[in-house]
Image (cartoon, rainbow, N blue to C red):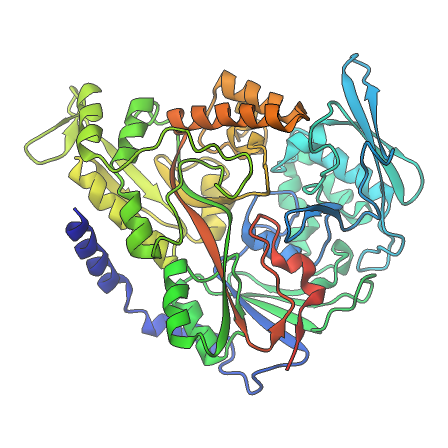
Length: 568
């Protein structure tokens, strides 16, 4: 089977390789080679996806997070050492320092009051101070059932907010969670601008200024603000005059979107871009090859991290509702061969969404080695029998047919897709591949659960990240909740829900580890998504650029962009 796999890889590469025309066009559109290999005031970055929205709290997409991290600052965040730190707040509140205090809610349950103080000089790009009123508006918008925010659960858990003064506020939570002081995903909004857009909550996602007036300086309060947007092409960021922190070195940063991963390398070599983002750039196999050829000219960094490549399955599809058939599909993928032959073993096979790099990872969960005979037996037992044409049908003569989707232009994902298509075809499954640009795939197809079969993409998480938004039954997007939540598979399991609830409020680490182990066991058994591999992020940087520090988790390196500078 390894020989068949290798032959297939070579065949697919021959199909994907001829991209010279598109590569040259991308380079030409980006302005051609740079005259100065170490620019002093402009940095150009290549990424592979264009954001579906620029709103901080609507849709979850790394392209948006990467760009907005240069224009905003979260109250709290995990740094490159995976330690929780303050960014917009002055001091991290804890039970020990008295800035977090247990309290009893009106319902008689144990809650917690957590107090934060905003940095004194924090101002929006139009000069208006960042205040507690912005916090309250963000909470009001986030908790509204029709606002369509991705992480509505965070805002729903806040029972009320007390504005102590212009810069200090207290959040009253309905429970004491182990991460009670981590409000990393509280994406602050400017009340003085966005309140008007929120007058009709059901229409908010289409009326927000972040998409109707994206270059409005008052939307941003980081070291940069968005100055120009050309949809599908590039985003220009200018230094923010009201930024209160260390002044950024570059006056402008231009983020070019080159969706084809082969074209982005050509743009780098031509000088059209200075660097390729590790969060959204070259695939690992490309980066390994690039390092061999150009490692002396560039600084190539491989950062293992909490990136889970998988295939979300739409469990509303009757073909995928059977857990045994989902297991059969996974037995039918040679993931070890994919890891070894595409990624030189640097992207190990995933058994579930929790990475071995995370302290809560459990190595004792069920695994699914490549076993086409076992897969066939499971299909046979479910009544899907191979016909003379090699395809499986049920008693009614219906084919077992699935549509597999991912982001277009990503040559590694296309390669993995076609390997899976071939291996599933050998099992008698008819697989149709239909890929889309990332802004459509994430902005509509995945978010609104319009995929009927499998959707291949990656979740990028933080350390010990509770999978509530992706696994809890209350987080299934639908028209009634304006497609809030990220449980795109439609997975609903009472025990999994209860474990998620229990993990969040268990402060004892050992007890929490045991709960995590049980949750991973259920996930490995039920397989709402098919695990593929844990990704490493390859950063390709010019030798003259210093200060870029990969994090290995969901919060991107651009959160510290003011530290990036030219160094001889």
